[in-house]
Structures are given as C-alpha cells and as structure tokens.
Image 1 (cartoon, rainbow, N blue to C red):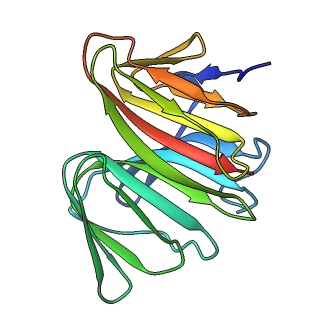
Image 2 (tube, rainbow, N blue to C red):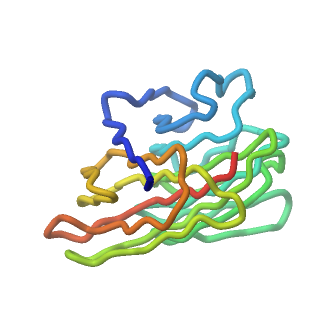
Length: 192
C-alpha cells in the first residue's frame, strides 16, 4: 500500500503582505477552508520578516509552532516569556497570547486549530544522509518543506522551496538528501 507523496511547487503557493513583510501559505487543511475565516485545522507557512520589531497577529484557539531558517529571532510571549531562536530551533506557543518578535528572519510556521494536533521538527541532512519518520499517535498528515537543497521520499523528489506532502500518512517514511549540498527541512507531523 505505502505512502503516497505529492510535491507542491512554488507556483502553487499563495503569498500575501502583512505589516512586517510577506507570508507564503504552503498548505491549508482542509483544502477548501480559509485562513481569514479561521475554519482551518492546519496551516503551514513561511514568512519573511522585513522589520526589526513585529507584533504577531492574535490567533486565540491556535497552537503555533515557529522555527527560523536564517538570522536570529527573539520573541516575547505575554509579559515575560522570552525565547531566543537560532536557525532550525523550534518554539511552541499559544497564538492567543500577545507576542512580539525582534529580528529580520525567514521563518516557518505550523498552526493547529479546530481539533488538529501535531508538532513541528526541523532537520539538516548532509549529502546522502537520510532521516526515518514514523507516524505516532494517529498522525496522518506529513508535510516536509525543503528550505534549501533537495530531498526525496518514496521516489518523490522536491527541490528548494517546494513541499513534499503525504495526505494519508500510514507507515514509516525515509527522507533522503538527494543533492550534493546540505538540505534544510521543516517537518510538520499532524493528526487531523
């Protein structure tokens, strides 16, 4: 039976402007839902933060994961919860808590809502290296964003800026760096 992957290309993504830069929506589930209407369960995106200080949009009821691919990011959640992220580190926080960030970065986001559960991971693979992922606790959606380099899974290949997507994740997956340079990955494991 196996896992079936598709590759979503850059041309398929929606990019929009916000007060601090631009956001590219990589995937939204259900696919007929709307981020602006808030009726989604899972949203995966990457944003370019182009200002030194930005206020996050208040998203009550949304569990957020955030990582950065380059630069340094300092975030303050609420009054005193301070987090400093280096590239490929991940933070998880409540989208309803006021959050301010400091730093110009490219980030990677996972938003979970309306009963969806999951988590974000990151990985850097050297040429020829691989990473095995097993679905846990009912996880059935796997999305792997190739920030840099090349990656493949189950004979499906993705290049920089593309998303490997398995909408019916049932068994272990081996991600392989199929290029000659380091591959940087943002990995979202979700139960919807």
